[in-house]
Image (cartoon, rainbow, N blue to C red; front, side, top):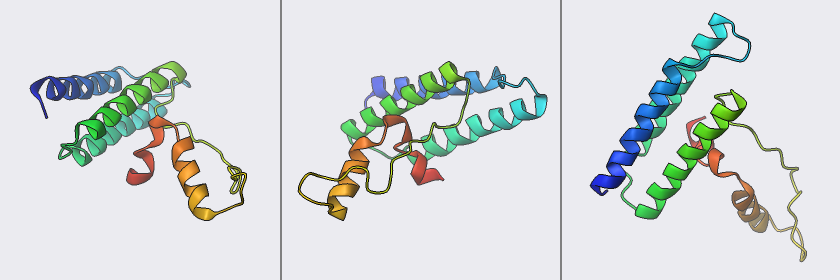
Length: 122
C-alpha cells in the first residue's frame, strides 16, 4: 500500500469516527442515538481491521469506494445501517434458462457497492 492510499484510508477512518461523535438519530432519542453511535464505531473498526492486510490495489480501491458510498448514504438518509436490497429468489433469470450458477453470478453483479462487506460481518 502506498503512502497516499494509506493516508486516504486513515483520513476516512478519522472521518467515520468524527461522524459517529456528532451523530444524532432521526428520532432524537438519546438511547437510539447512543446505539447508532456504537454501531458506527463498531462497524468501522470491524471493517477496517478486517481489511488491514489487503495488498491488491484494485481490492483496496473497491473498499475505499464502498466506504465513501456508505458514508454518503448514511449522511443523506440519516440511517447508519446499510440499506437492504430485495431481489426475488429467481428474479434474475437468464434468457436461456434458470441455472443456479448464473443466478449467483447475476446476484453478485446486482449487489450495490455499499453492501459488499455487509454479509461478511453479519
